[in-house]
Length: 295
Image 1 (spheres, rainbow, N blue to C red):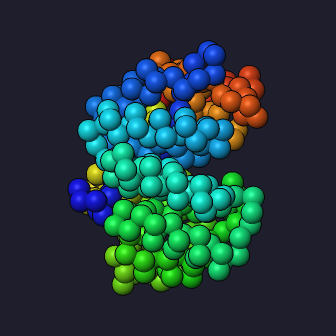
Image 2: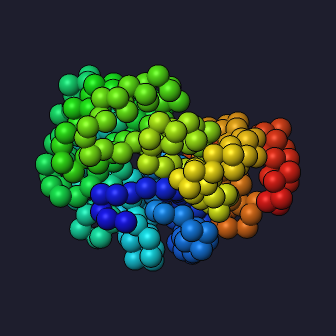
């Protein structure tokens, strides 16, 4: 895999915490080892699933360093911020310590215009020339949607190589494919349940939450599709669909951190304002995981 050709199953990893509330570095190492053994294609720390919003900049940088130092597969560091200057700092750090690429979420809370989004991402791209960047569009969390036209404009920038799409809107996603079809640009599913449909449109893979728990199955789904075995890919999609749904019965990453704990990898501790699951929703998650033979 070259520095531009990220394809397959990339895992949006959780950040485990100790009882005292610090980053659990041993837990991070267990997660890296588990996922690498499972055959995933890349690791994506410090995104939404990695609770980047409540990590200090020092912690954020340390987590990226842990991944780079201990991973044998590509590391795509989450480096987005609602401050362009802060995003530049985090992205420069990721480049300097040896991450393979960075993923940048659209600025949250500020609600920039489409023009502002173009200025934001193009400014970062210039500051880390030659370092691959993946846009991350998740309007449900940020309050702003990057239009297909904005994405297509940014796709013309040499080191902006793709987008993680978490809009959940296939009409929007189809428009992005159409507008970027003649560019060297990749589209990744940001929603596990849309992995198969996005692959069918020509997607390059998934940046997955579920792969924290079922990495081998997600890899099997992807590879089955790429090998032309649509029947097998569909079977796995429907087999995992209850898990995809259960991992979002509460705000991500609350359920997936509980699932990570249930399979014995790391604690489910959250940082406020995120908190533990309700008993009812935890029961839903446990039942699905038992049905799949995960616990």
